[in-house]
Length: 159
Ligand code: COA
Image (cartoon, rainbow, N blue to C red; front, side):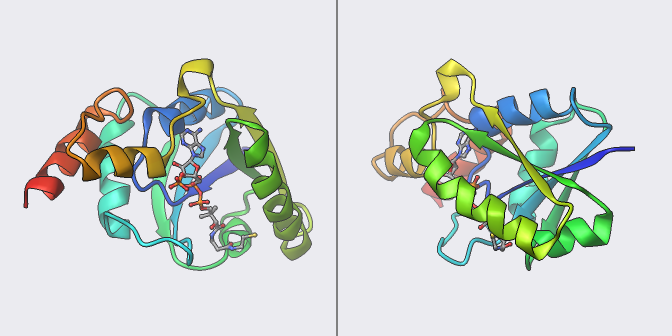
């Protein structure tokens, strides 16, 4: 059984992330969406809420689990026996950010390979920052996030 981790902050989980995940499940027996803490980022949603929203968005997928993890991704890989990390690449800039992480993760856990999936064209320009910025000005983000996330964002903005 080949287990892959799909780590990220997912704040919020977008159609871009869903696209990567839908394609990853065709490549691996099991995929764990590892909802992590990026020490550089302040998030809209707490980690458990991010997990719950992702679960609501992926009911149509089998072989996927969503787990909150506070700590190193390499440690989570060791704990679960995963040997693959999945990351999406949208543009060349992403690669500059991803390569050091992939190398660091392999230095921390020798057999841990990062597999990059290219984002599908129409999702290639979506990002958490973009969604958060449009929201800040009360813009419509329905083209970028699945319905459960959209509803949660609208509730958050109105409260
Ligand atoms: N579609 C849409 N958006 C995408 C995307 C895709 N396919 N792929 C990436 N993104 C966007 C996200 O929305 C996010 O945008 P934002 O920065 O504007 O919010 C950005 O790209 C990257 O976010 P994400 O993929 O969630 O990763 P991250 O950079 O926030 O977090 C971790 C990276 C969590 C994997 C990393 O910080 C980590 O591993 N943390 C745990 C601690 C650790 O192990 N540290 C050592 C790492 S070597």
